[in-house]
Amino acid sequence: MRTIDELLDYILSSDCDAEIRVNKTRGISLIVKPETRLSSNLGTVIRDEGFRFNYSYSGLYGKPVIIFSKQQ
Image 1 (cartoon, rainbow, N blue to C red):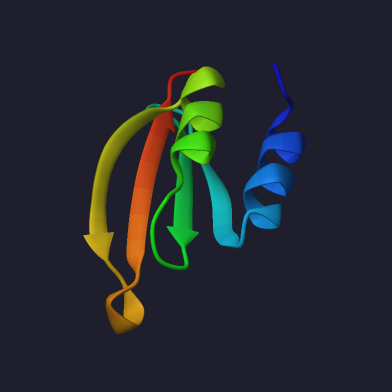
Image 2: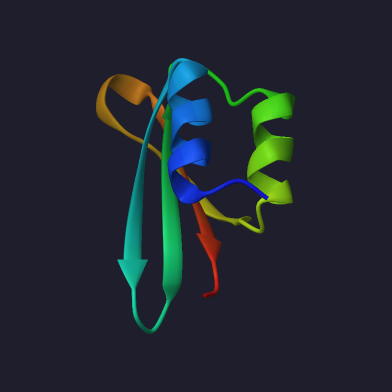
């Protein structure tokens, strides 16, 4: 298991923007903004850390925004 900081470093080194939001009732949200698509390797790493796909949408300039969540 990686720490949250290690996971963020890995995501950022994969040419994606990412941020973590913590909510006491909903748990941890991981917001990933890949340049084009999320690679299968990165998706596997995120799933292996206990995050599950929640939803996605088109952000600025049509770039994807993918929300993952994890219960604390």
